Structure formats: C-alpha cells, structure tokens
Length: 362
Image (cartoon, rainbow, N blue to C red; front, side, top):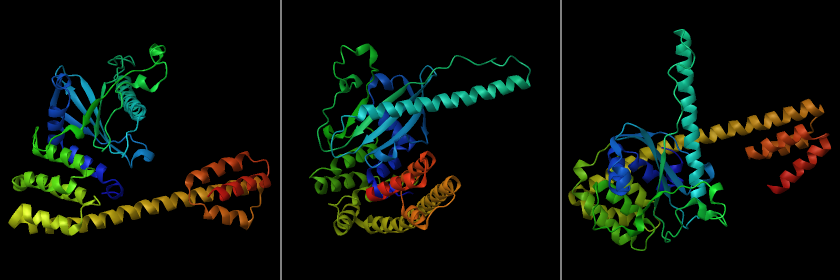
C-alpha cells in the first residue's frame, strides 16, 4: 500500500486488477489483436515488477510490463500503459517511445550481467572467454494503451505524425505504433471474456461519465452472483468498492444503500468487510507516508549539510544568515543546484547573490 493509492485511484485499480495473471491473460486474449494473440503462449505470461513512468507523469498514467513466450519459444514484452488524463495528450507516443527505450536498456543490462557470468564461468573452466556467448538481440516490445477518458481519442497511431514534413524526412524518423484499448466503445451488455475484466473495464469507462450512478449498480449486479467465487487474494470486490468510492459522485450512504440492495443478505457483510479492510489500509498508508516523509527529511538534511560544508571548505566562514536561508529550503533540487553554484562561485558574495535569487523564487 502506498500514497499513490490515495492520489491516483485509477493506478491503484488498474495495477491491483490487471497484475493478476489470470485476469491479464484473459484481457490480452480478448482485447489484443488476433494476429498477435495467435503468436503468443499466454500460459507463460509473467509480470515484471517494474514501472517506467517518470514521477511527473505518475498522477496521470500507470503501467504494467509482462514477458511472454511466443509459440516458437522466443520472448516478447507486452507493455500496458493506462492513460487517465482528462484530456488527450498528443505527446503520448513520445512518452511511450521513452518507456520502450527504458525497457530495452533494462534488457541490455540484464544481458550484460548474464554475459559476465558466462565469462566468469568460462574462466573457471579454462575455456575461451566468449564460449557460449551469442550475438545479442533485443526482445520486441508490444505497446498497449488503455484509454478511459471522456474526450474522444483522435490521436494518430504513428510516431511520424508528431513531426512536420514527416514524409520528406521519413528515413530519419523512427516509426512504431501501438494497440489501443478505448473503453468509450464498450457496451455494458456485451460480455467479452472474464467477468472481472469486463467489470473492471466498464467501471473505468463510467468513472468519468455522467451515467456513473446509473451504471455502477448494474456492474454490482453482475458481481453479485460471483461474490462467493471472487478470489480474496486480489480482493476484487474490495478494490472495486474502494475505486468507485474515490469518485466525488459516490457518497458513502448511496454506496452502502446500493451494496445492501444488490447483495441482499450479504450486503451488510460486504460493507463491514470493506470498512474493516479500509481501517487496515488506513494504518498501512499512514506507515508508508510516515516512512516516505522521514526518508525525504533525511535527504533534505543531508543536502543542507553538504552545501554548508562545501561553503565552509571553500570560503572558510559561512554567516548565520546564509545558514538560516539554507535550512529553510525544502526542495532537494534547489539544494543540489546551490551545491553546484557553491563550487562554481568565485567568492561568497557571488554565491550569496545566487542564494538570494533562489529565495525570491520560492
């Protein structure tokens, strides 16, 4: 449990649901293009526990990376990006390219470590160093975007569309595309694949829609018959309730009324379970936030100490005024820049001018 689950309920819901292997298998089987699915052995699907999204974009995106064997025993990656901005970001392909590059760099690092192990083993066995080392190739990455925003997705699916005169410069521009899963075209009555996948996608679709209060009870009714079978490892019902309750339209009393009505005699049990889970979640979130705050404070204190020490070493004497200003700075990036300024400044007055400029900008 982490703070993202509070600030980004879409990421929480997406990651909790689609990281489950059988859900991910069913989703890819039913929503990925048939041409690709025929080439994959989805029984080998494996979740890679990494995210490639920058901190700046974590409030509007979430991602999952899977590795899977093809029917001819090769490996490919499937990278699923959830887009939940309130607008269409035409630069999503540039972001996607950056994530693909990170995945490829990760592959290269893993391959480098594997080659190193082989070389060390060859050395122990007194074999030529490169024995058993084959030409390195990257495993393809299939990008998949899930979009559940309200605005219509009109973006082109080619990277070259981001460049002017792209036809003239075609041979110099990298080209790729992606699989788009746009929930806008989904119908609540058309069940495709696993019920959990269907309910999850429809919930994400109607989260932003005006018909939220009408459609959520319908989705609950779909779940009611499945309640006994829902795997408590994922706690899908609890995750579902937590997600919809993050919507401003979902008042607590309205939600309780719907749950009790739809799940009938089990309604109270469902609500009590969810409330108890919520208490535990609250405790865990509190611990996590506390740890993060403590960690951040430690980093800031160390950054301030290093800056003051650098100034003392270079200029011998640092005034209390400068120390007080430094102690008031709560941004580690500013402290890092000031450390560089301290090293580059010719005298203390020059540094103090830069410090004053930073203080005014805060």
